[in-house]
Length: 81
Image 1 (cartoon, helix red, strand yellow):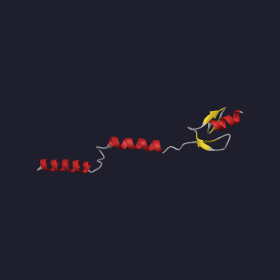
Image 2: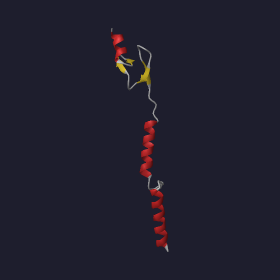
Image 3: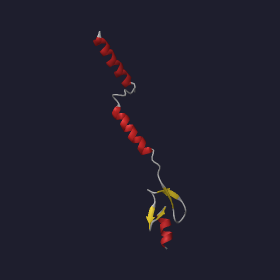
Image 4: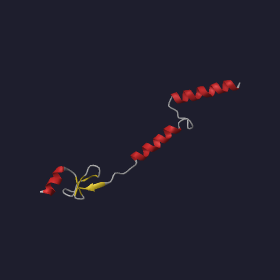
C-alpha cells in the first residue's frame, strides 16, 4: 500500500516538473539565482550633465576631463580650444 502511494507521489512530482511546475524544497537554488538577478536589474544608473552642451548621459558613458563630464569627444575638443 505505502509503496503504491510513494510511486504515485514520485510520478506526480515528475509530471508536475515536466510541465514547468516548481517544487519549493527542490528549487531553492533557482530561487536564490532569481533574487541575485533582480538586484542587478533594480539598480538606478546615475547621470551627469555634459559641461559643454548640457546633454545628460550615464556616468558610465561620460568622458571625464578636469573633473567635468563630457558626452562626446566633440564637446571635449570644443572646451580644449
